[in-house]
Image: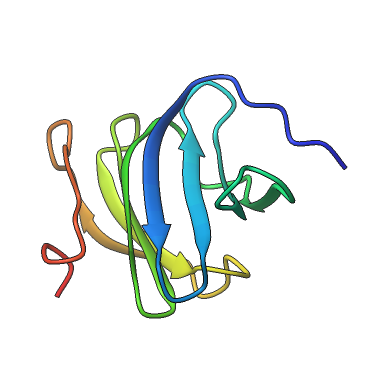
Amino acid sequence: MSVVVGWPNALAIDMYSDKLFFGDAKLDYIAMANLDGSNRKIIINHAVSHIFSLAVFEDMLYWSDWENKRIHKAHKFTGANLTTLAELIHRPMGMSHTSVL
């Protein structure tokens, strides 16, 4: 299945799994791919309204969402255990692996 990309504005590389994780703010999903862009797979296509930034740390993805003004996390390969970490943050901006520690 081909994954259509509309407006990718959140990118994170996981050097341990050699995967590229990205969010699409136009089509509202989070996906992963091989580092060369092949084998794209949507991980989460719900609970993503306007992803702004994305970080990967160990087995989790962390992302900020401008539309629902929240910071979320979920398992990086399955999207399971989706959790809201913070709410009502005015336009949450950047994420990095050090900001989620």
